[in-house]
Image (cartoon, rainbow, N blue to C red):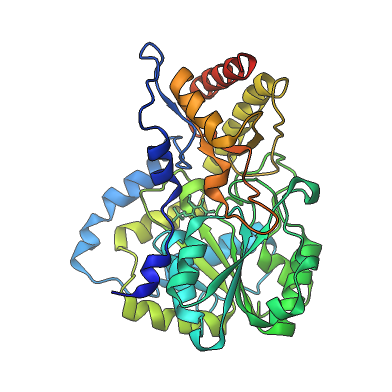
Length: 397
Ligand SMILES: Cc1ncc(COP(=O)(O)O)c(C=O)c1O
């Protein structure tokens, strides 16, 4: 077997299942899960219909590069959303992927050179795929803690030049899962300069970019920052976007990678061998999804209502703030996070994810310690009910 498989950590949900063993939640209270980051708002009907309508395409092998119609729809959306004004070429800058998870993972496999003691730099806490991708590509993860004193953005200035020199890949997650923090344009430009100086690639996971709380303040993207810095070829920059959160379609498995054409050409070569073409019906449904913005605006509005309702109940009793974007609350717990999660399940039948499960221990500690992640994905009624129960638990501690 590949010895690097042994380096993979158990997934946070495996640890959560263990934590709940032996608990006896009250049966009169229905279970509410705030633990899983799976959107629960309904998938728009027109996306579902487009899948059904195009099932006849099953008789053809799709190409890995995807139809030009899909890539053009994506290029148009990307240009509109991030004001890339004619600089996105659908034939060179876009590749469809089967959800960003597989793409974030396979990207590292395609680009890492394991012979140069590579580092893959990533935020801490982080989406666990970045770490597994680093291990299986023969690299070492290098964790940058996200703390409240820097608004949960890593202190990139504190990273030594030696680390940047060994870095082959920097994963960014903006808006962040789990903190909801957004990296600003000036910081992105600084990172793009570093990427050019030390010759590493930036993989910016932007799959929460369409869920933001201020309608007038959409999160800036890496390609937008590259343009602002004069890199109209997006060199050293690749972004990952998804329909899972934007369009409430996690089962569709549809996203895209965009950016540096030189890198995407090699990534396409890798993907052709890997065998990761997007099914034709998914491609057709994805075109209609990227072309519509109304359902996305509605989606954001519903998240806003949930944040307002839940924060009104929780902020008087715990240190929790509205994030800039995403659908998570990254709340401080009055007691140890694992104990808090266990008691909350045992006494109130509500599941949240301990923050320490989403981060690694570093010399400066575990930045997820004494925090929990709450995903406001359920209905307004369920989220509100969960908030009341959390408050009750805290008041009785
Ligand atoms: C930060 C982050 N990136 C990527 C993904 C993967 O999303 P998908 O593969 O559905 O596009 C998730 C899913 O939860 C996520 O939280």
